[in-house]
Length: 118
Image 1 (spheres, rainbow, N blue to C red):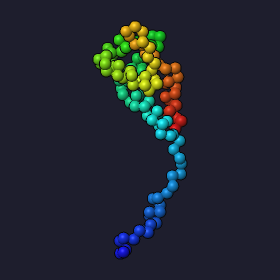
Image 2: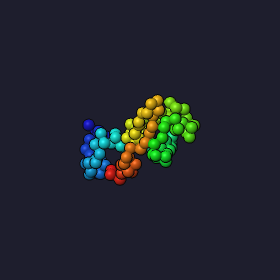
Image 3: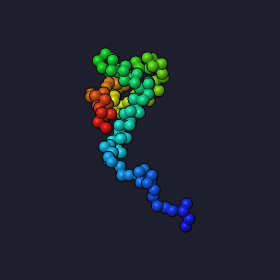
Image 4: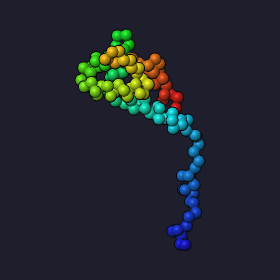
């Protein structure tokens, strides 16, 4: 074996390789849950939908009232609303042929705490 093939660590290698000093505070499941909320909020249309629902009279809005302000079709708005429901931000209630959406109680406060509790 020549000197180029020597496998002994150098002083530089010793500085690069080290044990992690801290264990992750989030397990994989919790990280996935938080990421789903952040992904839901990462779309401007979904942020606007949350804003509209939050500001609606009585704190709820019919899906029929959410298409015009966003200038989007009903299937697209329904898709965005489903993502917000799946992320635990909105509650959906079916009344006859229409669906009404409201904020899940405490969802905004829990969401603001997601980063603070990392």
